[in-house]
Amino acid sequence: MRLLTAAFAVTTLLATLPVLEAFSAERAAAGEVLATVEERRTLDAMRDAGGTSVQRRTAFLEAGRIMELASVASEPARCALFVLSSTRNLSFSASLVSSKQPAEVALAQLRDASDGGGSKVSENGLLLLHNCADSAEDAREAGVLARMSSARGTVTALGTIVSRSFDVGEFERRLRRELGLLDGPAPARIDLGPPLRAEPLSQRRARGAARARAAGASNVLVSEGRSDSVGEGVAELVLTRGCHTVGVYSADGSGAQDVDAELVDAETTERLDRDRSELPDAFLSVCVMRRRAVRVSWRGGLPAQKVLLEDAVSSIGVGIPEAYGERAAAGFAALFHERETASPSVEPIFETMGAQGNVELTIGVEPGRCYLAAASLIRGSSRGIRLTAGDEARASVVETQAGNDAGLVHFCANSEDASLVVDVPGGSIAWVGVVWLLGAQTLNGARESEP
Image (cartoon, rainbow, N blue to C red; front, side, top):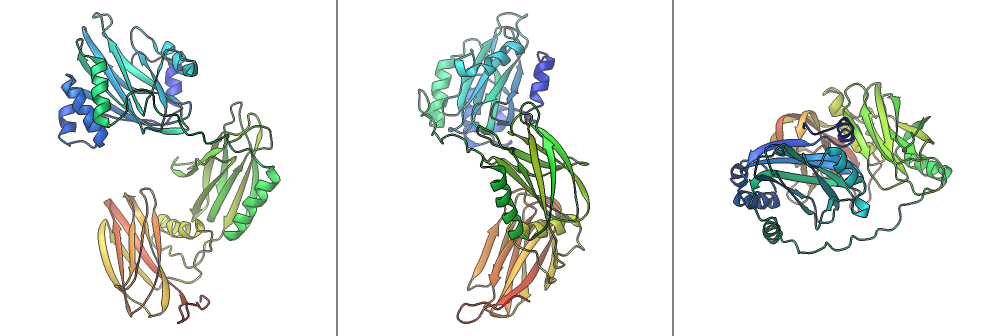
């Protein structure tokens, strides 16, 4: 955007990069692009108002982050219209950037949004901005800066050009009716109380150690990092083969703390895990099959204070199949690590491979015995994994969300045959499925010890 200053460009890098899509209102209304019902209704309203080419941008913002969300090329004697929307319980503010209002002014308004500052604040997750070009000199690119007031959330911005006779007030009233929003100010947000105050570091470390022991940790490596003047920091670690839980502990000090952390591969920058909980400490988990350098970043710690990093390492059992690659093996190991239990020490009794889509298999089992069935991705990215295992009398089902590489389900056999259904939607996907034998089930419901 030509109006961006260097300071604003740096600010945009601090937030999540948005995805930009340019499309026409007619195409969106026809369902040729993915949009929510609310977006389609908004696009219909913008089309009826004379807008044809619509710019759409969506971004995830943390509290206090400022980002450019939309821009359109303004025209003489015409007006730029921006509609920003989010979920109704989120609050955000926005300000226009134009030839009449440079980016520096818009940034100042957003930073002073708490006392008015000239920016507009959303109502029930909706905000409209309108700017008209009086002459050819004013007909420069117009844009919108948004600032998240809630803890975090996603904001979508739609921008278009409309005629000068466009009635903003009537458009907003129609849009609120279409979206089922009430006129007037939004209901007061629920007061969740003050942030949690950190207990003494010794108590938090003792609780973390107990959890690590429950997960089978055999070694704990301790290192230190330091937060900068705003409570953020980065540290590099080298992980050995095994399942790791990295605890990021804030220092003892006065005031509320909420540490958020992220774990990425130092070489590929692939995100391995992140913690966005509202707690004074953060915990990151990952399983690796070989030595791997990673980078831990955090924010929310006490400014210019030490941060303690504890890496609790659990071994990976010999029952985890490794013939299908590191990704699949790490996915299986993570299933047990996240449940704070040791991975299998016996090899699977059944192994199979598959691709995207639905696969139904029949496996031989022993009545009265119990099993664990799991599937893990070898390659590709899926929208989730659905596992169904058992028989007609009783079946167990588990569904994972997009981004999870593996799923695990437990079932007990009532006959000599059991059904295993693996559904993995997506494209260019390969997965491996395995079944482990557990203890036997007796008539009174008791179970023998595992082999």
